[in-house]
Length: 277
Image 1 (cartoon, rainbow, N blue to C red):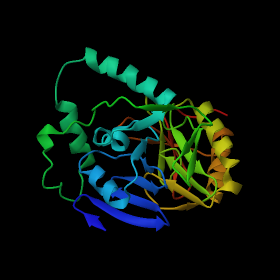
Image 2 (cartoon, helix red, strand yellow):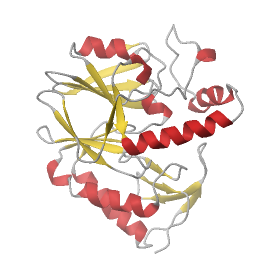
Image 3 (cartoon, one colour):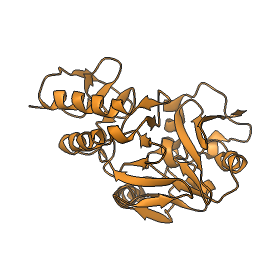
């Protein structure tokens, strides 16, 4: 289904993938008691109306992390959530922003950097866009928490890597793992100011690899729609190679900062510094 800015696809029974303007991915899960909304994208379109058409149960937003392309639609929902660690990061960032000059330059630059290929929705006004809108969560999660949607239960896995407070969400019965930007088939950004340390990231990938036997479908927030569970072990094996000094990096520039890219073929990891074995 195509809805102006969004493409909606039922990839598994009661599990929907929402393409946010070809820039990122949200997921909607239909539980008997709640509608799970994993990430809300950039907030450019009317995501809430799309979710309401998919399921009538009250929605609960669960953010994998708090970058603008994952939680700027939160203001459209009454109940939102993220990890305790990620919310602390948001609060620290907000304090820093409050001390800076008031300007919409960052708002303009976000749209300039994204350069979406598809036209904006008819009601979207770029001049009024707020990519750094802060919505206080109604729920904060810790590692091991379980989120019961009714017939579907998401287990919170704290996964510091892309950000220090990132989480993955495991649905054991359906053998699903939602990974945000922590695991994807492309460039995994680990070079940001709010990224975890390399050692923390390596520990995260070691831990996630232990879930491979429990997972059939890895569902990332960018790139390839679905990855097999074995990818978790493959990714960790490559992370070990980086840690052991077996992969030579190349210097890489991005709009979010420069770093050292470790290429695994069709995907890789970008760190702020060279990894010394």
